[in-house]
Amino acid sequence: VLLEALFLTVDPYMRIASKRLNEGDTMMGQQVARVVESKNSAFPKGTIVAAFLGWTSHSISDGKDLEKLPKEWPDSIPLSLALGTVGMTGITAYFGLLEICGVKGGETVMVNAAAGAVGSVVGQIAKLKGCKVVGAAGSDDKVAYLKKLGFDVAFNYKTIESLKETLKKASPDGYDCYFDNVGGEFSNTVIPQMKTFGRIAICGAISTYNGTGVLPPGPPPEIVIYQQLRMEGFLATRWQGDVRQKALKDLMNWVLEGKIQYHEYVTEGFENMPAAFMGMLKGDNLGKTIVKA
Ligand SMILES: NC(=O)c1ccc[n+]([C@@H]2O[C@H](COP(=O)([O-])OP(=O)(O)OC[C@H]3O[C@@H](n4cnc5c(N)ncnc54)[C@H](OP(=O)(O)O)[C@@H]3O)[C@@H](O)[C@H]2O)c1
Ligand SMILES: *[C@@H]1O[C@H](CO)[C@@H](O)[C@H](O)[C@H]1NC(C)=O
Image 1 (tube, rainbow, N blue to C red):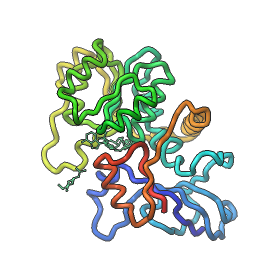
Image 2: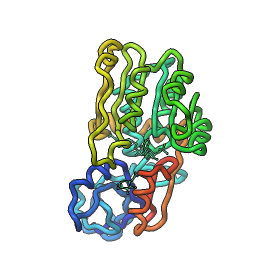
Image 3: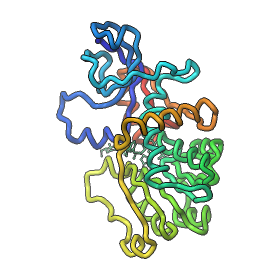
Image 4: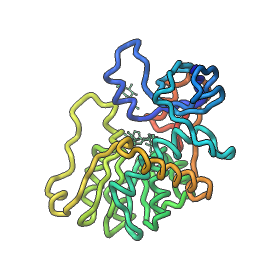
């Protein structure tokens, strides 16, 4: 099949993966594409797929590793959501919060990069489950968006005087769950405020991805030990098959029911992939960063 890219995603992990690339290599990444010519009856012309085809406007495939979007994909929902809230970043939020953190109603959840693709879904699922949610983001507009989404407390981590005091004020009793997208010094401030038996989902560490020097030290062991914390790293790819399909269905239904809102930060033009990528790393985006080919 000959495929034409419709929407492409740029994601933080590409910053880490790109360190291993040489000049002339193709950047990795997922896209939503349309079959424009076909010699494969399983993927007739017009079929819409999601696939890891890299930063390419057109590709040729034998059909292996192409994932068809569900036939019942509603007209009201953009196809690009298959790269975000009803795709990889939604899955990350879903399993990170529900399986790795194992949140229960009534608990208090902290999430950073909260206005981004993963963080905004984490906060909304936590609210659906009856939690109190505290979110950190890098601009006042993002903070306003988080409040619109129903976050109980949201703050701009770039303008507050003290992260420690802000967290204390937001939840004087501490935190049951910390969904960490940022890592580094930020985490070393959050972790001492975890409650006993707190759970920490290590989803990402974007504050460290662009660095070349020595990494900041991790959280103090005496806090992890005496507060009996559990920290676990995870990858969204861990959940495959039926559990993944069930999660995608839940996410789609929540979107259709208006229980989860989505925002996409769309850049037009395939040639603008690098600019969109670098902009996302700097925090230009509200919600999921998408490039429309
Ligand atoms: N484990 C997995 O399988 C998996 C899957 C997907 C994503 N992730 C991770 O999840 C995190 C979020 O990914 P995403 O796709 O949802 O991206 P995103 O949040 O939509 O975009 C990245 C955001 O990170 C924030 N940021 C950048 N540098 C920062 C810094 N030094 N300190 C604090 N915040 C910073 C920026 O927002 P501000 O304006 O708020 O600074 C930026 O908008 C990343 O760490 C990513 O690697 C993990
Ligand atoms: C990443 O590092 C490079 C080189 O030091 C710098 O030019 C760039 O602005 C940095 N990007 C971010 C998002 O901090």
